[in-house]
Each structure stands twice: as C-alpha cells, then as structure tokens.
Image (cartoon, rainbow over all chains, first blue to last red; front, side, top):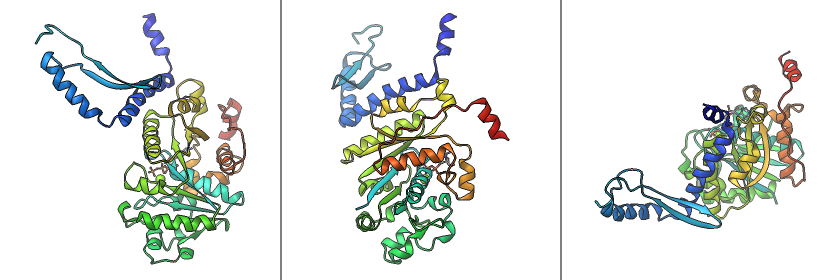
Length: 82
Length: 260
Ligand SMILES: Nc1ncnc2c1ncn2[C@@H]1O[C@H](COP(=O)(O)OP(=O)(O)OP(=O)(O)O)[C@@H](O)[C@H]1O
Ligand SMILES: [Mg+2]
C-alpha cells in the first residue's frame, strides 16, 4: 500500500521524460539502421525454426556509450525444443 | 544579406504560425526589414493572425507563376513599413509550389530584407521539405507534451539528414505553475531530450485568443510577459547575448489583480 502511494506521488513530468528517453533512443536507432525492419523479420524467421516466438519476442535498437545495440529478447516458455 | 529562418514543428497546432507572426512583427518593431512567408499552401493562416487578411490581392503562387509582380504580392503591414507578408494561396495544393522558383525568390528577398521568416505546414510531407530548403536556420516549435517532442525529434533527424545543422528550439505554451508542481516537463527536461539549442520559451497565454481575434499579435501588447518572451527571442536572433526569460508562477495577488 505504501508502494502504491509512492507510485502515485511520482510526478507525471518525470514519467513523460523517462518515456520519451526510451522511445526516442529506439526511434533514433531505427533511423540510423534503415535495414532494421528487414533484419527483424529475418531474425524472427530463423528464431521461429527453433522456438515458439509467437509472443513477447522483442527486438529493438538502443544506443549506449556511442554504439548502437540490437537487443533481442526471446522468452523461452514451456518446451523450448519445438 | 538577409537571414532566412523556417519555423516548423512536425506536430500540428503547436504554435508555428503564432510564433512566425510574433517574431516577424517583433523584428519589424525593432527596426529590421522583414518578410513573413505563409507556406501553408491551401490553409492560409498568417494573414489573420497579423490582421492583414483584407489586404491580400495576390499570393505566393501568383507570384511564382508570374501573375503578380513582387511589389504587389508583398502585402504591407498596417502598422508600419518594415514588415511585409507573402500570403499562401487558398486554392492550390502543396505540390503546386515549384521548389526551384521558390529558392530563386528567397535569393531575391535576401537582398532586400534583413530577415525572412517562413511559416511551414504541419507534417513532414512535400510542403515541409520546400519550407526548409532555402533556410539557413530552422526554428522548431514544440509544446511540453510527449507527442509534440517526439515529432520534434523526428523533424530534427530529417533536417540533419538533409544537411541542416542550424536548428534551435522554442518551447511554447509553458505553464510555470504546472512545471513547478512537476506536472509539466520543464524546458530543461525537453532540451536534455532533444539535444538542440534553446532559442527561447513562451508562456501559455490565455489572452492569445484575444490577440488572434483582433489580428493584433501578442508582441504588440508590450507590457505582457508573452510580448517580452517574443522580444527576447528576436534579440537573440539579431545576435544579442540575452539571458533566457524566467517564467515564474503567478502569485496569488497577481492572479487577483488580473481578475479585476
Ligand atoms: N503561447 C500560447 N499560449 C496560448 N495559446 C497559444 C500559444 N501559442 C499558440 N496558441 C494557440 O494555439 C493554436 C494553434 O496555434 P497556431 O495556429 O499558431 O499553430 P500552428 O502550429 O501554426 O498550427 P498548424 O499546424 O495548424 O499550422 C491557436 O489557437 C493559438 O492561438
Ligand atoms: Mg500554422
């Protein structure tokens, strides 16, 4: 309950700033990697040969320390050997 | 040689035309020779904000297509000789403007005026690339809202990809009371996100609608904070090293006073 209270106290301007930082890092990365959408669908094709990629597959671009990173997060649920 | 600035935003309705009108008129009052160009072809707006809608005979398309001479297409401001308006056409579409002819016109205007302000249409389509093509400086207007800032970032990306690096930001419609309470992003929050230079800040002014109703831009209301905000920006554009305006939440007394 205390946690709920703290969460509500968090100011919306702060939240807006954080959300913008995240989405813009992604969008700027996309703009620098014009091939990203094609790469993404190829990656999904390959991954889905081995694992169930239906849900929660998350491929994104981020930018840290002067480098672009392609981040692939694939939760392996249930029987991972398809 | 005059300087050409394009006012743009990405997201619509954030105050591009209002900003253009006030900066152009503010510069004219300061003694500079200015022309304001409405490039929102099909959605003419700047004329009404400036109160010059009854004076329009020819528009920019008439001029570019040779149906009007420069002197008859440049509408004289009713308050003085320094400001001229080049109106948008209402009947054409954005594609009807020839980029080559427009760039030629800008080169001509640069010789006759100190400042050229181009009000661009919302969006990042045809009209947008025409608007910034001939400009040495691009002024991005954004409000402290996530959608406006996200779109501004897109526009910065497109401008930089097109070799435009003189980009600065006006944060419009700031509400100091809300910023103080942490309910609205501050200009510093926004600058940190967009990483471009701050040209100035403009408060959210409930009287803006009155100024537009009358066709007398805020900058004419000399004692107002908003007029000062625009004057602050024009001085910076003229190369003066002026500190940024500080917007303070209104005191109880001031609010009471304004009600009277
Ligand atoms: N600082 C301000 N305070 C209060 N209202 C404002 C302020 N700036 C602009 N507005 C109002 O916001 C509305 C939109 O402004 P304006 O037409 O200048 O935006 P725009 O970006 O040119 O829109 P469009 O994308 O349609 O061309 C108008 O009603 C205007 O009066
Ligand atoms: Mg407009």
